Image 1 (tube, rainbow, N blue to C red):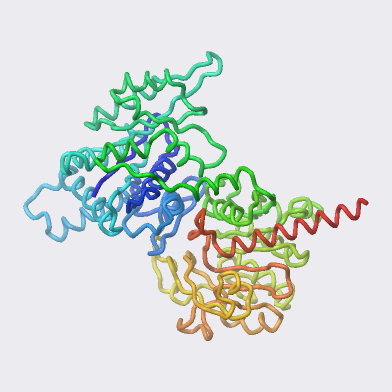
Image 2: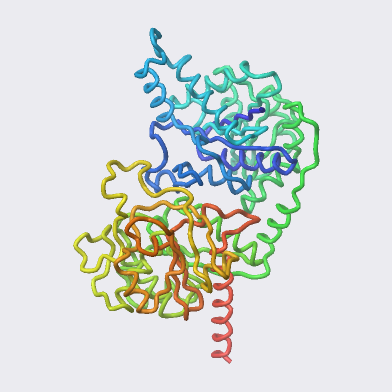
Length: 554
């Protein structure tokens, strides 16, 4: 097994995840079995309880792990499911070391960072590679060289170089070269200092990748090579591009794939990147364009909805369209007048209400769902977005005055959304929701079944992250009022026909909502079926609206 360690310097948020995922895509395109590991130096066990405003979205894997959003980048770029154990945190490492100490595994030993903590880190990295059956493991070390939290991990990967065969370990260091407009020059000193800091921990990078606004000129590349003791043909420029999916192509053009093969002692192979080239061409030169309104509460931090945005891009590729996102603050929708609601949502091709937690912005999301339902605007509800659609329908169509979710009003007259029975005895927050892949049994003849390619009905799997569900006591009155329950998870105690997984409105152009998070399984070349159908419907709706406007003006 080969190991590629990716570290970062100068500043955080340089894009180590995208760099790692892009390299993984290049290796996958050459036919290698690749997996990825993300190391997060924080003491949390996982990302599940962290603030989206601070940390971005929580990405859920098929196994139910609540992980860093970079795991989502790996799955999208590598087009595979990342196995359990691939997001390693300081909290996990110390928890296991302490457990072993209490169990007597280190009997008579003084438990220390070296070797006990570093050995546990190395064990977890190797285990992740073995679980994936990988030939090459990409390991992104979170944080920046010099951070005190990262020191045990840097020591562990330093040891890796000597634990493994000589050509089985590669170090790639990502740094920043800023451009000073006043003096019209690139500044390499931060990169020089960053590499020097990395070397002070005993790690000599084999490859230096440089983030910059523009592609670096040859003289700057040569200067970096000279002052970092890295060969010039192993200094790569990761410059700004119009879309993240261009990065693998830009790096391949510079020869990154070949350099990695040479350093790892692999035979050079030709990558098959035609699908990437076609996808990027569609993104940059689409035949159509559509605007989707996302009514959420974290709109000031788009990374909180990263997988949603990427899924819309994938759906756009499938429909030869550019998808423009209009961010709508749900709190403002709740307080706005009818005119302000029209200004925010009128004219868009579709409305998407994403997942989330807490009462803030809920009534604004209800108004967005009502607008979509009554105006014939395509609607896609995700997780909480489905519960919102049910609340709105219960209030305004089924006549259930005061309908709400127990999450927002435990004394609601009609709790059409309630806590799952399995959650009643749950103590603690972390890792206790309904997580990961769960089956959805889709009803024959429904739109959702058609979208998934099983018009006669069938079972599919999607990922979940929730504690609340549509209250089974209200499914009958909701269906009597015209709401279609199009998908369920059968066989759960106390659910009758099953836990409600998807709903739709039959006589609406496109009104579909799921309890699941289908965005977590969407890939650039394999878009999520609900998203692909939603964007297609939004294109049709927006086109119809423009035709009507043109006729009115004529």
